[in-house]
Image (cartoon, rainbow, N blue to C red; front, side, top):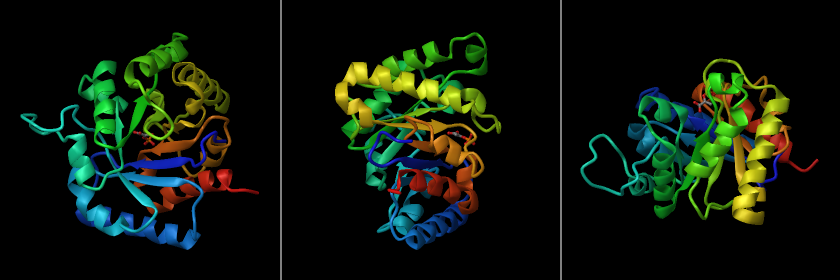
Length: 259
Ligand code: PEP
């Protein structure tokens, strides 16, 4: 149940697929969006970098937005293998994921690096989706809230607000595992995040979109969408097929549609 005017359902395609499959998936999503005749949530796909331009060609003029999966803090320069936020903007992106746990763990990204990347995204006119989330050991030790609050304080740049930032709560132990927190645990975490952001950023934080991510699928999306302060989803595995991604989009569309 969202505090934001429009929830956001974002598909993180990670390092999967080739151009032909990406184009086919994007086309299927465009077709499904057209069949809805209007959506009350925003829909985003974040393909691998080499698929950005072909996917942009397919989604142009549709309600589906394009995002990157990561960006460098610098706009350009000697950073082999990286991509700048301005480059993602040049490729048609409106959003970029920063601080995903696979970047924090696999590439040693600290909160301060994530914060610089989020600031770079804003500099380039992109909306950063700043990911936070505790490991299983941190949850078992009773440190889930404290961990996420620390990440929020240190990863979200100053000046964040509803129009220029999104936060995704992704418990590391729930990503790609088929396991999710209990609805009450998501409720507790999202409420704590909302309070912390409101204390730092004021009333605008009431509508800053807080996504839940971690094993969202067509079977659990409606229940997750109904949780207070859940303003959308960041979806990995289930975003790789239209048949599994679109029911998640519909769950958030239904939850925010006037009844
Ligand atoms: C993710 O990696 O952001 C994610 C949420 O993955 P999955 O949906 O596969 O758990």
